[in-house]
Image (tube, rainbow, N blue to C red; front, side, top):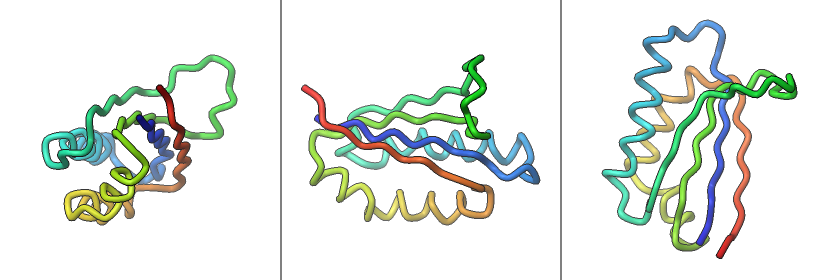
Length: 99
């Protein structure tokens, strides 16, 4: 099993309505990509102030690294990336295998 952690910092110029729409579209990928077992989203609430401006965290679960690679090239994911890019200032990604 594999976790794919994606953490975004959206552009300051992006409206809350646009960000809400992006989050909804990202979460919908679970209904469009069979290899995506689960997806969670949360807003950073850490009081430690180490966030470096990153605000929104998504945790995706896949059966394997190979299926994560398939997800990366899936048309639904590529479409999401095109609507995301104008609003994304930074992204941080971590992948790890777990039992």
